[in-house]
Image (tube, rainbow, N blue to C red):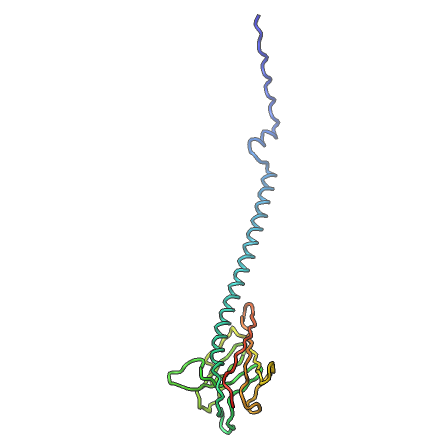
Length: 218
């Protein structure tokens, strides 16, 4: 007598919805959710990249402003360090005096190291520094000369420097003054403090430095 093995029951057919899920892998709702997540991640990524690029650009602009300010400081330090107590006049009819006129926003002095050398050998040059129309203007004129210095065209106009301030150190320590008149003081100040405001159209940087005046009048 032979025994027959029982046959395995046939699997029941899947419902239509389950068959569709297995064949396609994702439902339409799942696909929409995945795309939404990807979109959010892209927005976050590009937003961070944009912020990073803006910060990098601001850093580059600030570095360029600082480099420009340092170059200008070196130029002014070299010129002002050569200040000499030159006695003379800048206009007819004036009494001879030490040519040094210090104002809060303007400085006129005589130096042995001119901003820009001329072709002819010149011992002394009168220099004027001021902020005009939102830009630092520098004028110079060889001496002796009684021409009006303020009527000459500037030899240098720096639009990056929008303001400049001067202070002058008297004989006593920390005796800083807003003005210096050699007709009254009869000598040069011990030092000049210059504050430059640079960075027109970008991040502004205020830089102050002090230049000692080594020449003196006995």
